[in-house]
Length: 201
Length: 223
Image (cartoon, rainbow over all chains, first blue to last red):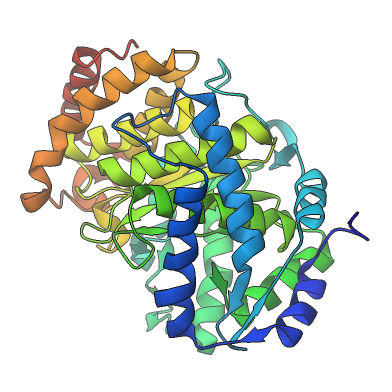
């Protein structure tokens, strides 16, 4: 059936609330491995030894297996203990709704992230940074600047401040919020010090 | 293929505010999902879900090895590449991948691991490379800009190459570091391989970088 509209996060919540109840261990140890094995067999997915596939038919079958996996299995909400479902038309509406290009950053430092096709001659966007690794407060700005000053780097991904004002940035505490806000300020400071204040962060 | 209420609520805030949303998920190879094929099937399903259910604008992948905690071993690279090519051939979705190497900064192994993944991600059509969390991203201060430099240089050198040619390079390159996993060097902290005041890499790190470029050239990557 044709989709009424694309699914968004609010609709997803409603579907979770009404979804099938099951334990997380059932999901992890039965539903996911069982359905994944079924899709592997149904779509005859075998990789062989190549890292990158050079067989478009295999890639198409893997795409269909992924769509089928999502249709058959849905997504599980660990707090509600329920799984939501989505139908095929909604999946394709959602794919159509997704952007095909983004602008990251602003001014002369912005970069465009556009869909590439295969191994295009156009370089992918390089997002440099510690990628969530822990970083000491005293070297945080300099470390981020070491990425921002690299000509190959287009945007920044932050690290995690270990402390803020000397306090551990404990998860689920006010210090975590303060540390997160400090990270944003310090990353912007670092890109400015590198002469690229408009970089996407 | 799971989410919690915190994730859902954060997405709701960003979506309602019109922010660009990058949704992250890291499928684990070697866990309950199964082998490389089953993990890739779940990876494709979850990537699609991030756009079709959770309003993501760009997806950040990161297939990871359960034993080594890295994205640069042979199996995670194969999963990431197959999943990316499957989506690249059938959609225009924006796909990114993140980097967790076993070795740390100022080591040749760290740079070769980073380059191998950059080559893989670029040739499999990904739009954004995000990294790198050297030393598995768990050792304090063990990440630097030099790892991002090699990520960019390797990606740039790979653009436009044929897939069989890239696979041949990858096979040689991964063989150079995969035997060293058991005693991978943790490397140096940022403050031990950079001049922190001047934000410049040490002579030692520049030499290590040059050596890594030579290895990549030996494997067939032209700079």
